[in-house]
Each structure stands twice: as structure tokens, then as C-alpha cells.
Amino acid sequence: MSEATAAERSAAADGEPLVDASGLTFGYAATPVVEDVDLRVDRGEYVGIVGPNGSGKSTLLRLVLGLHEADAGSAELLGHPARAFAERERIGYVAQDVTEDEKRMPITVSEVVLMGRFPHAGFGRVTEADRDRARDALATVGIEHLADRRITALSGGQRQRAYIARALAGEAELLVLDEPTVGVDAESVDAFFDLLDGLVADGLTVLLVEHDIGAVIEHTSRVVCLNREVYFDGDPEAFAESDALARAYGTNVRREKGGIVT
Amino acid sequence: MIPSVSPSVALVPLLSAPYDLLSWLVGLWSDALGWVGEQLGIAMLEYVFMHHAFLVGALIAVMAPLIGTFLVHRQLALIGDALAHTAFAGVAVGLFVNSLLGTGISPYVTAVVVAVIAALAIELIAETTDAYNDVSMAIVLSTGFALGAVLISLNSGGLAVGINQYLFGNLSTVSRENAVLLVVLFAIVALVVTVTYKQLLYVTFDETAARVAGINVPWYNRLMTTLTALVVVGAMQIMGVILVAAMLVVPVAAAAQLARGFREALLASVVLAQIAVVVGITLSFNYNTTAGGTIVLVAVAVYIVAVLAGKVQSRRASDEVPDHTDAVSRTTGDGAGDDVAGAESAD
Image (cartoon, rainbow over all chains, first blue to last red; front, side):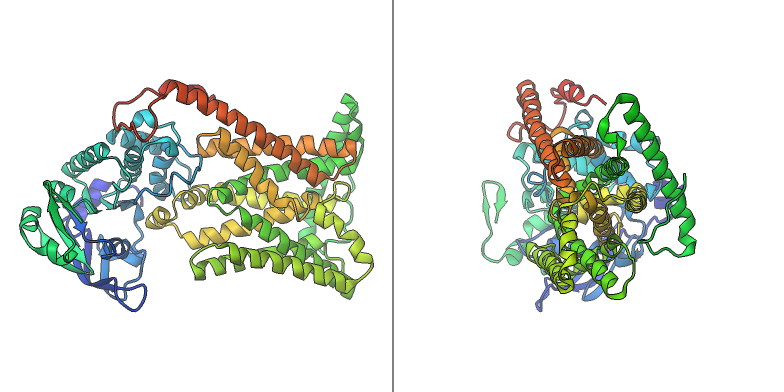
């Protein structure tokens, strides 16, 4: 069953959206955090979700990934209901890097990347082919020389590359990133987005939540601006010229020195 | 070998064949160790209870750090302590039922049952409140211990004398059937961890990513705490209720100072635990000290040595790799640390 390669599967599923959410509403308490959101992501797209703090960006990702049950509406991942989606290895997930520094768990970079192969291996053994794939993934993100380091000994940017490598090792077709550049120094952020650009050029689909609006406008192919509801969904140039940002962020947004600060 | 008939383990006939086999194996071990002692002139190996103690100790020193590694790196070290105290309630239940009904159930069997129930209760609390918190853990811990204390006092007199062995552990009371029980617990724990190693590792490292990867996190959490309950009860007979959690934590903490990888840390923690157990039991025999306490003190000494060794190691590493900190992070092409990294992993 696992013998169908990613290429075969994607060929079979061509044209079908990777993410298809409609009318999504969800709240932790009485007031919804996300309300009536439609989001469709097609293969090969590079979608950036922006919005003020507490605008429901991360919640939307969690709904799309099937980690929460929506109060209303539906979320589908690769054609299956997200909550019941079973082919998990087709999704890669990179979260905000905040806890790892306190958590001094001894684990090497290559051990972390190999985890991408775990859904493929199930209860079976990790094979040499799995290790090869993990090594290739490390090479793709450019940190193969750090393979035997402790993951906690890496800088924030290097660590996020390791997590991307884990997704690549798992042959993910959709890469979901939740504020991946928090705590990463500016120089590394640029290199990080260059890496994502390269992966998208190679055919990966990326769904990104990011606080750095400038980076999203510069790199992605489509911007979704969210503050509980969708304020804008379209190409980055149009977003930069629209007033969606001001509406979504209220009055607290101002433009400064070429960048946008909230 | 004549398999000894066990009066205290109430076994249905179906179970008596495997029991006899395991009992025979324990006997073989005992003979082998006795022979080694004779050849090398080690006096303490004349005693059968010491053979059992070393067997039980060696098995504990594999399974306690094995489970402990997963617990410690999720900041769940306290669970072992909480379960040990509820296992004490289980012991009390066993003793109570025995004195009431005149049955011969091993208190360790009731301890396993009660500890597993407590483990699942802790998981239930954690799942409904969405967090493992100190408070609920402390409540479970004290409830277990209080229940045990009350049940024992209800029995009055006679039993209070024997309770020290459960609180502090005892080398000389490790009977053959206790050794067999431990072999069974060990087999269960080792088998389950081997089969589910990848899933447990993923959940330990990053729960959210594990969920995205399709791993049933609540299920593995329940599995983990249940295994912890088994280990705690197994280790209780020589470590005692009060100190048993130390075996889950101290060797793991020591290994974390030395190892870089997870597998490496697992191995190191088992090796360090074996050292603590063998040295601890030997000292305990020779100086007539309590086994659990002696083993823990040796383990702590090993931990201190590991901390110092870890400091030396990281100083050497940072001398040679001055730029591996966040401030000077480079994302590509910085291979300066490779030689040092290679030198440290001698496997």
C-alpha cells in the first residue's frame, strides 16, 4: 500500500485541491476565533496567511490540519475530511520554535529528521532507504554538516531548516508552517525564505502563517489576510495596494521605512 | 531443578506452565551466579536471595531508565512518584484482602492493578484538563499514600511490622516468585517499548507534530503511564515506594549530560543504571545498609560525575567551536564543528 510513490499519488490527485475549507467557524469560548472562513489551496501554490495577533491564523491552520473540530463548516485535506485524514505523511508541519531551548532533550538533528519517515514505517523497522531519504532531505535544506549535532545546539534558523527537512523526508506534498521565523535572526530569516522559494519552485505546496507581512508580500504567490474573517484573498501586489491590511489591523498599522510594522 | 510451588501467587492452572518455565529460568540464573561466586570467591553470591536481588536489580536498571527517558524529556518525572505512592495503596489493598479473606494474593499483584488504574486516572485528568499539572499529580500521590496508610492501620498490629519492606524495599525478601513477576513485567515493558519506540519518541519530542503526523497521542500517553505503573511496581520490591521514582529519573538525567542523541541517551541511561544497581546492591550487602537508599546514592554520585564530565565535554567543544551560538548563527556552509562532533561520538 505504501508503494505508491508521491509522484504517482499526486498524478492521480491532480487538480484536486490540497486544502478545501468552507464556512469554517470555531471558537474556544462563546465568541468565534475564526468565522465563516473559506480557504482553498491548490497544488503548487505558495499561500501566506497574515493578520494581527489573535486573529485566528494559527487556529485556522489547526482546523485545516484536523487538530480541532470545527463548530461549523468543513475542512478537507487532500480530498478527505481533515479530522479523519489518514495519510498523514503527505503533510509536513513546522511550528513556531519557542520551547526547544528550555527543553534540553538529547536528540540529534538526524534523529529528528528521521521522524519524517516514522509514519511510513508504522510499527516496522526504519530501513536504510529511510535513512537515505532523511540524509537527502538534510542536504536539500543545506544543513547536512549538522546531522550529528544536538538539535538544541542549533540556532533558531538552523532548527527550522531541520524541521523542514523532516517534512521533506516524509515526502510531504503540503508544507504547513506556523510562524516559523519567530525567534530567528534577520539574516537567517532571509535565507529561510529563499529556501522556501526553492522548495516551491520544485513543486511543493506551502501554506504559511507569518507575522512579517513584508516577507509574505515579497515571497508568496497569494496572500490571505485574516482577522476572524477573511479580509483579503488574492495576489500579493493587489494586497499591498488594497486597504485590507488597514481594515484587518484596525488603526494600529503604519508603514515605516519600506516595511510594515504592526 | 524442582520448580517451587508458589503459595502466594494465586495462579489458574493455565498459567502454571509458563510460571514453571520462568521459575526454572530464574533457578538457572541462580545456579550460574552461584557458580561464578564460587569460582571467584565472592562471598555474597553464596546466597540465593542475592542471586534474585541481582537479577531483579539488573532488570529494573533496564526498564526504569527506558521508561524514564520518555518521561523525563516530557517533564513528567513526577508521574513515577505519584504512581509509586498509589502502588503502595495497592500493596495495602492486597494485605488487607488477604487478612480479611485469608487469601494468598501477592501484594505486588494488587499493586500492579491499583497502579495501572491510577495511571489511567491521571491520564483522564490530564486529558480533560488539557494539562498534566502539579496539583492533580500531588492529589493522586497523597490520596494513594493516605489510602495505603489507612488500610494498613485498619489491619492493626502485625502488618505494620512488615510495611517497611514496601516503603524502603528489601533485598532479602526477593523471593523466586517475585523474581518471576519481575521477569514478566520486564518482558511486557521491553516488548511494548520496542514495538512502539518510534511513536513514543515522536510524542515525546513534539506532541503537536506527532498529532499532525497521525499518531494517536492520547493513546500513547495512556500506554506510557501504564508502562510506568508496571515499572514502578516492579522496582518497588528492592527500591521501596519512596525511592522508586529515582531510578526513573536520576540515570536519565545523568545520561542527558553525556549523550547527544536520543538512542545514545537511552543506552547511556541503562548503562549508568546498571552501575548504580550493581555497586549499590554490593555496598548494601557488605555494609548492611538499605538497598534502595544505597542504590539511589550511588546513582546520584554517578549523576554528579556525569554533570562534571558533561561540563568538561562542552567546554572542550566550545573552545574548538567558538561560533556555535545563536548570535553568530550561519545557515549554510559552516562546518567548523564537524571534527569535534565526530570525536565525541565514539560509537
